[in-house]
Length: 178
Ligand SMILES: [Zn+2]
Image (cartoon, rainbow, N blue to C red; front, top):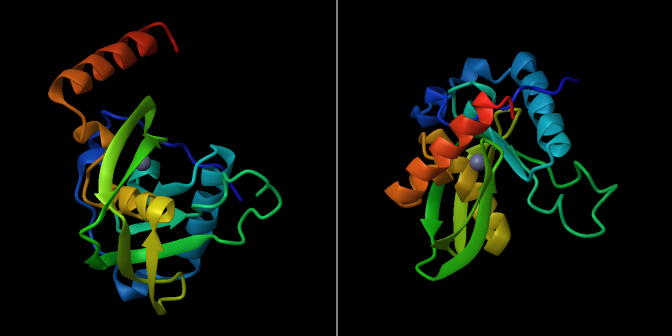
């Protein structure tokens, strides 16, 4: 197992639309990489991590929406979800508002509205089709990670003013070596 490097905005790989995985790419090498991604996500700590965040612009992600819940320590990995080529089958019209942060957009927290639930279809790490409905916070996590596969981060969803202010502050922090 290895902890991977998480890349940050404005790295161009985070703005790329990821390409679908081909069936022959769902192999042991990918499964090892997914395990490293999960390890990286838990260590961060975070509740989701998409491939572009570790520099791979193909369509896969890991998520464990319950892993940061109070009293969940020790449950780590139990609810790990691995998605390859995920697609939204249906989304609720009803909206749900939640605060989102991102491991690739350090120190930015914003409230966004998203569908209250989404029905998602994907392939698991063995290439088996799966389908499930994710609601409330779990839905937010899955939709947030799926946005990454489209090259969209929460920084793309805030106002232009906030975005440029954020990028300026990060640049300054990097120059200071922070
Ligand atoms: Zn993110």
